[in-house]
Length: 218
Image (cartoon, rainbow, N blue to C red; front, side, top):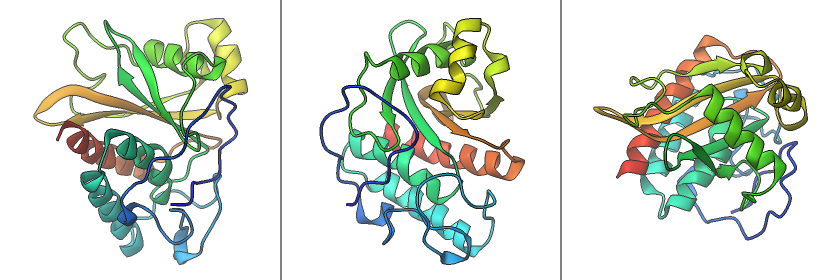
């Protein structure tokens, strides 16, 4: 599988090779097809959600690929890299619950193995803890899987807010991976891009995140 082009993100110490995902998860050009069926490279091109036949087909393919992933690592790769087939974003970070109420970075788009000690990795984990704290009952930020739109202004820590422009694009969509009726978080997906998130994009990500949550719990 040809790995998608790395986004504008520096993670020191990234090593290893990309996992192999199901062929259904990858299109002929590396899993990135824009509206009208034209191939495009990584980045944030396009006009957002594609609620047409092609968009619906992409959703079904991603859902099927998630269910058929042969390992957790392969599933995580699909979540951060191939979700771009449905919605446009510059960066994607997948976090998993950590002891207590924190989060740890499990996958970053375009990076085969994120370094847990890299400054960017630490910033993503700390920001997730502030923006999507895990309640004591270990339930998702929103039990129904609702997403949250955030910017640097939502960070209470001035230093963390100042670092936002260094590590991430301006507008973030935080979406928990939950699998109803069990509302415990299977993960947290953070998607970043330069322009604000539209409601259609937000709905698509929420539905896909639920499918990812089911696949991860299986």
